[in-house]
Length: 293
Image (spheres, rainbow, N blue to C red):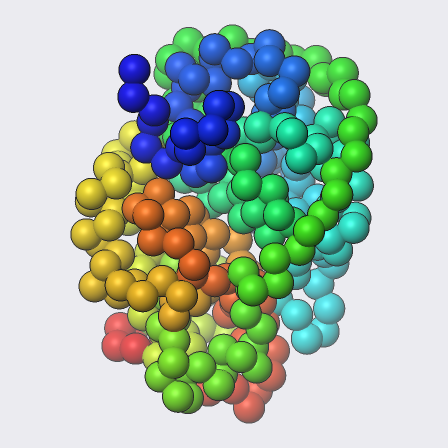
């Protein structure tokens, strides 16, 4: 039986995607931990409430605002990266250490799940994968659910921050000025063009950024496109992954583009965590509208 796309040859080592059947076969494996990342930006309490009503058995819950980000400041974006030590402590409380296979899921488009996928890799933990299709795929396959909170056995998670996975605004500006990097904006075309802006105070995009909406990576069922299709879509923009930086509104949905590139075998691109909501904090930074970079 061939391994699903995006997995390693190492036993129990999934690094990009895992399907429902594989997760079902490991539900009672103590080396596997599942994390529910459901969240709604415009209704922050909805994800936790949905988790309390029903979740994959033994899944822990990760809140985007309080677990997967630190508090925003006057100069940051809406979802700054969490403090590595604080996040490591939470991972340990959830029963995750360096030997754990982590599976993350959300309500379908994998944007929030991909944020935790990226954060774990940022802390040096490679064995993390997103459940392809998320909660809806699990339900559609008749997967079992629980309503009770899981029993968690704390472990010790040692963070090993991979600083080169992120790019700050200074490096970004220098790279754009010298054409040393390509900036992919994961937001919708309408937000990129500045025609609408439901979350941030200023509409538009970073001059030079190329629009690549993250939802283009998924099929109608919310599952990722085949490897060949993802690779064909990204290659014209990201043939040299090390030169690619990803952004979105606050550094969350951009992680889904990072995941899609990893599925396609295009490794080495980076995240601009502050993204649009940080960029516009400084009025001296230029803003562009329309559909051209």
